[in-house]
Structure formats: structure tokens, C-alpha cells
Length: 73
Image (cartoon, rainbow, N blue to C red):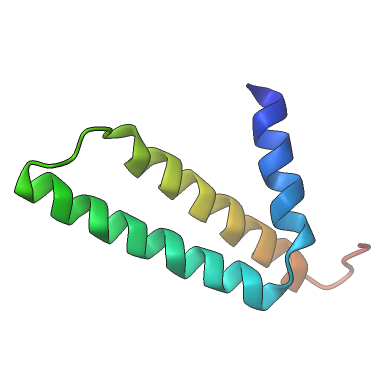
């Protein structure tokens, strides 16, 4: 399981800032769509909420790290 997370993080690190922001917006839209599906009773996999939120958190953390002064990479 840890290797899957590491692969996802490595893929996110390869993206530039605009691509990260676009991915974040896409995930936020997915969460909105999941909420609509839940209200309509069409949602099958509720774990998608958590997965999307965690990826958004990873993106926000990565963006914050990039914005700090003294960043080495």
C-alpha cells in the first residue's frame, strides 16, 4: 500500500504548479459530483470521498512546500 502512495506522490511532484491547480480543481469537482450522486441515491463507493480529499491534501502540501523559501528541489 505504501508504494502506491509513493507512486502517486512521485507523479504529483512531476507536475508543474498550473497542472497541480488543475488537478485540485478536478478533484474538487469530483467531490461535488459524488455529493450529488449520494443525494440521488446513485453512489456505490463512498470511499471515493476520502480518497479525493486525501489527494487534495497531498496537492496542497506539495504546493505549500514549493512556495516556501529555501526550497532545494
